[in-house]
Image 1 (cartoon, rainbow, N blue to C red):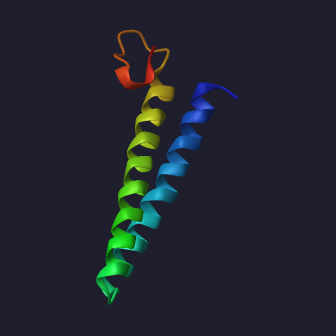
Image 2 (image 1 turned 45 degrees about the vertical axis):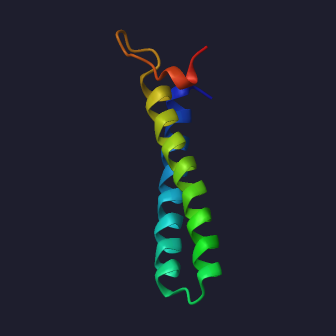
Length: 77
């Protein structure tokens, strides 16, 4: 698998995460107890982190071989 192909996979994964976050936000709006809301909030927070990282990795793998591209320092050695 090439990095360009991998970037497509990261974008697809990010799309699924984004969709799930929106579903959980709707559920949180309908949640009755505070405990349910806290659990949903924590789940959304974790998925949001995963979404951000998937998007960052999609950009990194898309542009990895471009001259002059400044890579995100978080993903380099």
